[in-house]
Image 1 (cartoon, helix red, strand yellow):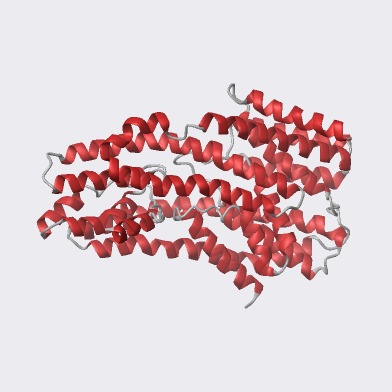
Image 2 (cartoon, rainbow over the protein chains, first blue to last red):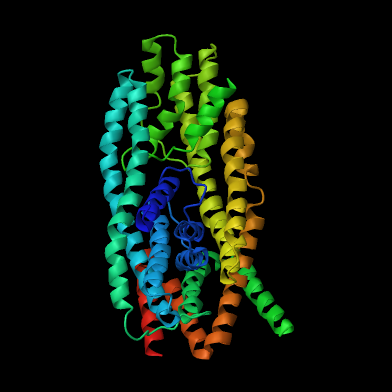
Length: 232
Length: 242
C-alpha cells in the first residue's frame, strides 16, 4: 500500500474518533503523530511532528458551539509531510528545520480547512436530521438510525479525502520550498523544536492564570526552576 | 437485558455522528434510545407516541449524556409499568440534566482534564519519550470510560434521583485536578524556558516569552487558528533572520 493511501486511511479513522464522540483521544496529534510514524515506518519523526503540532494548540479549549480547528487531520498531515519529505531529501539534517517548519505551516492550514468544512457541513446536516425525524415519526426507526449512522462515512471520507488530496502536492511544495540553503537549523534540539512549545504556553497561561489557579501555575514554574538550579 | 444495555452503551459512543446546527445531537439521542422504544411499545400508536417525545433538540456534554440516557430510559420504563409519569416531566428532567451536566462536563473534561493530560504527555514528548501518549490516553480514558459506562448505569438504576447528589458530588476531585493542571503547566513552562535558554541563548528565550505573551493577548480577540498561525509565522521569520 502506498504511504499516502495508508496515511489517508489513518486520517479517516482518527476523524471518526474525533467527530463521532467515540473520543478515545487517539485522534489528538500527540497520539496521531505517533501512529502516523508507525504507519510510515518512522516512529520517532512522526511522534516529534505530532507532539509539536499538539503543543501549538496545547491550552486550546473548545467552547460549546465554537468551531475548533480540525487537529486530528492536521496532526496526521504534519507528521506525514515531515516524514515523507525528509525521506525524499535523504534525511539531510540541515534541511530538516525547513521541512519541519513548512510541514507544520501546511498542517495548520489543513486544520483550518477542517474548521470551515464542518461549519458548512453542520448547517447541511440539519436537513438530513429533519428527514430522519420524518422517518421516525412515520414509524421507520431503522431508516432514521441509518441516516444517523451513515454520517460516520462523512467523517471518515473527510479525513481520508483531505489527506489524499493535500499530501501529494504539499509534499512537492515543501520539497521545493526547503531546497537550497536551510534557513532554520532543526537539528536536535532544533531551534523550531525549542520555540514551538512557547506558543502552547501562551494558551496554557490564558487557561490557568485565573485567580484560583495562578498560584499553582507560578508554583509549578518556580519549583521546576529551583529543582534545575539545584541539579545544576 | 444485559445485551440491550450493552447495545445502548455502544450507541453512546456515536452520539455526535449527526451533529448539526438545528437539533445539535437530537438525532443521536434518538438513535441511542430507539431500540428500547421498539421493545417497550406494544403497537404502532404507542411507538409513535414514545418516539415523538424524543425527536428534537438535544445538547449535552457527549460523555455525561450517558447519565441522561439512563435516566430517560428509567422514566420511560416506569411509565410503561404504569407509574404516573407525564411526558412533560420526562422532558423537564432531560432538559435540566442536560444543562447541569453540560456545564459540569465541559468544564471538567475540556478545561481541566484534557489540557492536564496533554501537558503531561507533552512534557514526556519534549524528552522524546513514548510514555507521554500512553499516560495521556490512560489518564483521560480512566475518567472518560468511568463516566460513560458508570453514568449510564447510575442513571438507569437511580432514575430521577441521580441528579440530587450528582451536581454536588460529580468529579469531587475537580478542584484538586484543576490545581494539578495549573502546576503541571507551570512545570512545562519552566522546562521549555530553560531548554530555550540553555540551547538557544537569552535572545531565543526572550523571543519565546514574547511569543507566549502574544498568544496570551491575541486570544482575547481572535480565533486560536489565526493566533497560532500568526505567531508561528512570526517565530519562523525570527529564526530565519537570526
